[in-house]
Image (spheres, rainbow, N blue to C red):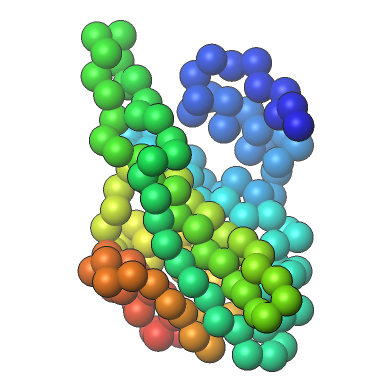
Length: 147
């Protein structure tokens, strides 16, 4: 699948995509630090349909997928960039419902991402599973338990 990216700068490419064919999917673009939460309208529909019954969500992050961004002409690089993904599953399927690419791995950033997702018209899942990352635990708790 071709995205139609013509910009060499990854941030400018995201801005171009946000205001064109992916409008409504990319919700925020921060450049320094780099943070981009995203989900599609289709992902919201899938989640809302499955939320009618018991929903178990799993959230995890990996830092080995996204390259560091070159920030300046002098070669200053960003910190490690992590891909966060929230997935719901049952005995028959597993589907991603919201994602975030982030240079920051703190409670507030995770809380902000999940709060933006909730504001987009969904309710918190009945159960959320994650590893023992304090930032993930804190962000999930603040977003889903303060509802």
